[in-house]
Image 1 (cartoon, one colour):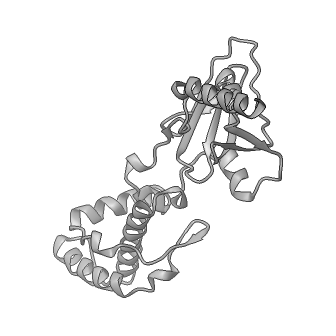
Image 2: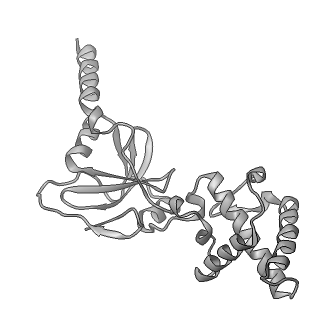
Image 3: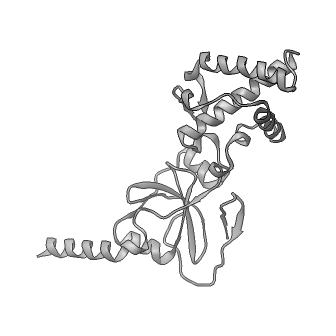
Length: 228
């Protein structure tokens, strides 16, 4: 079997044990109230992905998952998946709507600049010389504040007005770099996302292995108290 790596590629999981993982590939999974989907598994390891934070993945052994189930922290629900959950299970490319709002707004800002400049260039209104680009950048930056920001979309959700105060007008050299990346990607917005925000984040659930003994002890004490 395979799992996604930090570079959004796939690497083989070594499966040397007969231990069976206790998860259902078709089940919605909740760990301590947080929603996950199972994206890959083998006899020793399962990889889960957060539904509410799609860049976050977590890897667990079968024993770790069984501990979470025993503690009542992991619940499987076999209701039908939503389209978003199915997409997260099978498509591991980081998309615009997966990003935190601040970063998504930055990508939208960069895309707006690229689209507007390319339109001006196509209509013969500017060139890529420094003086011409400075004039175009000033014009585009002014229009950015006037545009109907509430119509911007990131993936499947509408966004409110971005925090425009955080953005500054790019110099010509920066805009040229954005344009090169944008064109090389086939004009995909995510080409304008800072690299560190496109990487998968490997994480644990809030209650990781180190917490299991405490959690088990607390649950056992709670059960004994109810039975006495």
